[in-house]
Amino acid sequence: MVAFRVPMGTAKRGRTIVVVSDILERFEGVRERGPGQWAARCPAHEDRLPSLSVRELDDGTVLLHCFAGCSALDVCRAIGVGFRDLFAKQRVRLADDGERHRFSAAERLELLEHEIGVAFFIAHDFLRDKTIAQGSVQRLAQCLERIARARHA
View 1 (tube, helix red, strand yellow):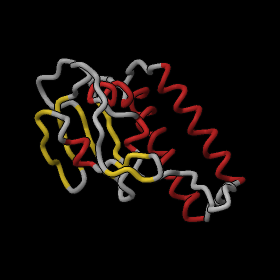
View 2 (cartoon, rainbow, N blue to C red):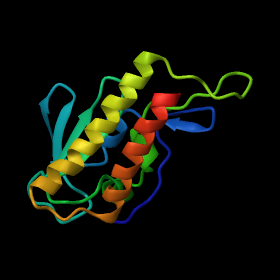
View 3 (cartoon, helix red, strand yellow):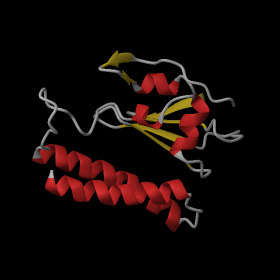
View 4 (spheres, rainbow, N blue to C red):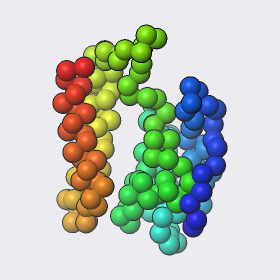
């Protein structure tokens, strides 16, 4: 599949807002598995049976997990969206005066929950003796960095 970029959603302050339906329409063989959960054929590899899990979190974030081993970045490239398009809300917001916003306790917990979820998917693959891509190792390091920063935000 050739990667291409197609405008989606509505623009807000220079950023495209993507909803899960924008993502799902780019996959083949989509089946709903439950509320906010779908299975589809992975576009990043030759997939005859659905090996891609798609999940929408309460905040609109879209999680992608290919059980054949493709990274979420590979899947994004295959459907022509940016990785950041999976995240409906910006984690760091700017105040009107341009200063960095201090995270509330609830926002810190939300960030922690998200980063632990990312680390869980990487650890899950590792425990199943799957090869961990360098990008996943870097993302795991980013999880640790973001959690540490949230403590001081």
